[in-house]
Length: 152
Image (cartoon, rainbow, N blue to C red; front, side):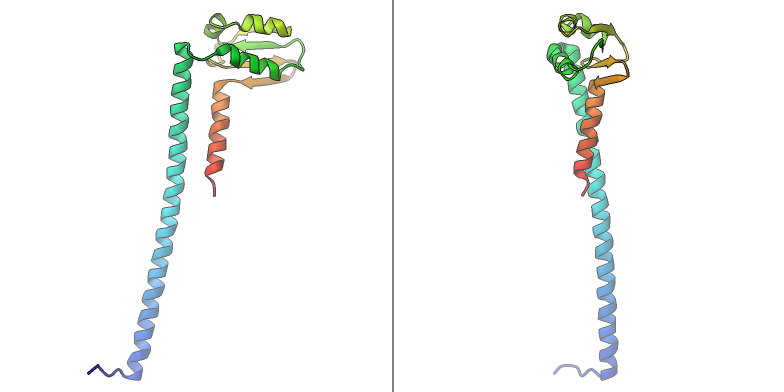
């Protein structure tokens, strides 16, 4: 036979179960919040790692001479077609290993060395207008877009 439970015991048993249920629910919510925070931190870490890998591969490719610098300069110059009396600033090593002089001349632009422009990129200036086609800016834009894409 089963045990007979008095009415007074039933109330405290229900109260005890309700209290445990609430405690379990609170713990589950805390675990869920912690897991969500961990997921966001991991996503940010993955984005940072991806950007660092991209940076290393791109810079290594530029330095190894496997990047078509002329294509980079053509695109930048095309975006600057409306400018007049512009100058394209490039890294000195890229200037000698590309056809940037001829490409700029065809647009009526000048070329200047600028060690502040990283390898594989350029800046175009005309008056107060600047087009930043540096790899660093492109990577920062990519990083921002990737991080925004991880926000829920």
